[in-house]
Length: 202
Length: 431
Ligand SMILES: Cc1cc2nc3c(=O)[nH]c(=O)nc-3n(C[C@H](O)[C@H](O)[C@H](O)COP(=O)(O)O)c2cc1C
Ligand code: SF4
Ligand code: FES
Image (tube, rainbow over all chains, first blue to last red; front, side, top):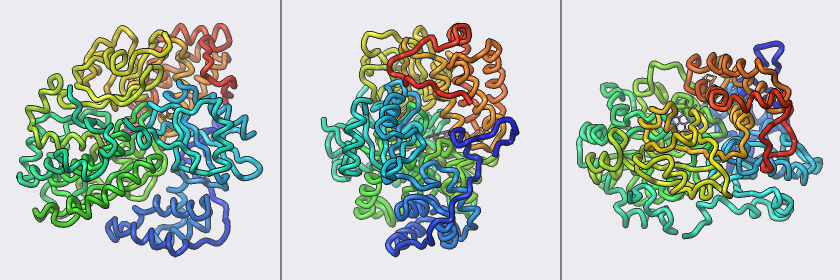
């Protein structure tokens, strides 16, 4: 909610101080291996500071069901001794948590200055054209979501595209976008060329 | 200058423990463990090492402030959030030289008496985190981290903590809040983290590059370190050059190197025969500099003298095809998006600036809007809880200051007067 009646925020004008209610979703419990992973993580923080593992726990939720729901939030709150409101408060602040259903592949294009100087706006345009959706939308088949992201910390390899919070493509040109989309559709994460630091050899 | 931090990064196995051990790996730590903790702090103070995260605060002094007489545990938090637009140096260090960072963390812990170092790494660096985790496991297995390190009886753990997409998590108290499992919103200071930080215990927050400088200081001494740069700006420094240059990248150099040399020497000059228009020398948060101002050393003090800041040393270069209204708008979108929302001038003011810039960029602006930008900007800067407010106002304030005729032309002609083919055809919608 805006604090100024004439200046309402809308989704395009995302503000972190907003609290958004999540949809109920399916009943949720962690799969045993994820629960074990979370328990292991909890040993890294003081015993009375379970809350420190909240971001890790929310990543595990996303790994299991793709996005966050009210049921998942309650489950996580139960484990970390937090109220559902406290979990939701954290969850809605961080942009790498999806608050609604997203496509199988979330394509995240860096839009900040260095990438924009290298043509990121045109990359977003090309992806938008290929996928038939605007940034922020998911295509009808549920395969792709297109998002704009802020500086990914690889501005020397601009423009940078990240997929599903993990896989990177660098120096993307608008004319490559059609092929990139087809490649992701066919091969999933394997289509990513990766961060240059991992692939470059002297 | 011979590279120190990035000397081996092009070697295929530079990130492995074996490689690291063959090149003085963990010898700095060994030296630190043979010294009294206070002597380590004194050595770092004598070296004059200044924080590489943005503010350039002396690291030894920061450690000295960490409360000593207390039964509470103490912590090192390594700031690996690296989100300042135009900055990508910690990325390189962590990916190609992770053990250097671990060694730095351990030396820091030894100096202030901490038993745990948390490395807060931004969520987007997942591929870097995987490298860190794999190498950390090896360091644990071979006794360089954990219990009884190198048989000296020193115990220290390192924990890697993944963030989830928030620029503000790089501010030190917001980072602590985030580590505690809350929204990344800054705390009111004082108390400073050195007195009451993580879990309300004494804490030192240090940048990745800062910590990576420690091993070589312990090995080569304070004098060697200061001799590498101008007075009070010693040591090796990583510079990130991006934007309209031929060879964008991370370059290690002394802080006596000029900005001109970094842009035209190391980064190869402006691309495709274009002309330089403006640069931002220290990540998107600092005032822009014009082409005639570049013959100065790229040091904390020299850049401050000409009215900007070295900040995170992320140099963003723009050529004459760049519309300054567009550039300011691009950055204000970033700042309104990343504002944590805790204080009103930043939360609402950033959004206003963005809307007005969008309006002008689209040719719908009025002359009075230009002064409005300055007025709103000056009412954000210096009036907020953390330095983010100043950073958010800066792009609007300095572009108007240096490129006012360009803003006026947009208003007069009712369109963007510096369109470029690398920009989108769609014009952003003014809300
Ligand atoms: C809005 C904001 C964002 C920041 N982001 C970062 C960051 O991403 N990385 C970093 O090392 N320091 C960042 N800082 C600086 C930290 O607050 C802190 O000064 C720094 O981590 C201290 O480490 P140093 O003394 O080693 O430089 C940021 C500061 C502010 C106000
Ligand atoms: S200045 Fe901005 S980012 Fe900093 S505390 Fe205030 S609202 Fe949050
Ligand atoms: S601006 Fe895109 S990675 Fe930095």
